[in-house]
Image (cartoon, rainbow, N blue to C red; front, side):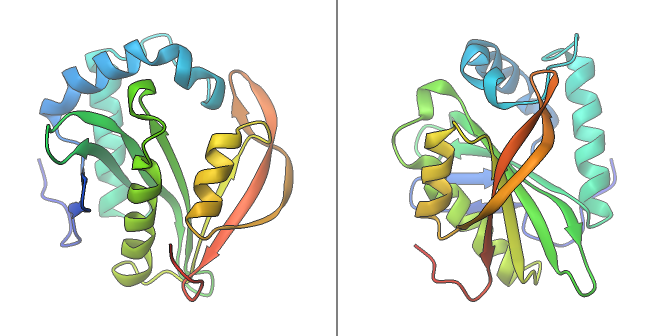
Length: 190
C-alpha cells in the first residue's frame, strides 16, 4: 500500500488517540458499529446491504486513502488512550482549496462512549489540526435539527449556528434538513 502524505496521521489529547484507520481495525470497527447500530442509524445515511463486511471495510479504506492522498478527505478513528478501545470516528471531507480554504466535519460515537465529553475533546483537536496543519480558514458541520447532543457538541467546540439547509443530506434513506454550523480559524476555541 502506498504511504500517506506527510501529514499527521496520529493526533492525541489527554484521553484520546485519533488516528488513521488501519486494516487491522476491522474487527473492532465492525463489532462496535454492529452493537451500536440502533444508536447510529437514525443519524447516518442508509447502511449498504453489506455494511460491516470485510468487503465494505476494504472499500472504505481504499476511498479514505484516496481522499487523503488527493487532499480531499481525512478520516480518523477515535480510541481511548488508556484502553485502546475504539470509541468512534471523525472525518474532514469536501476539502476546498483556493479562496475557500474550508472543509466539512462529520463524526460518530459508539453508544457506550456517549456522555463523557469524548467527542468534544476529539472535535476540538481535529479542528485545531485543520487550522494549523491543513491551513484551513473555516470548517463546517451539519446535523439534524432534533439531534440535540450533536448540536451541543458543536456549540461547545465554538461552532456558530448559521442556518437551515433544506434536504441537505440523505439520512436513513430520505433527504433530511440539517442545521448548519461553522467555525472560523480565528474563532475562540474551547
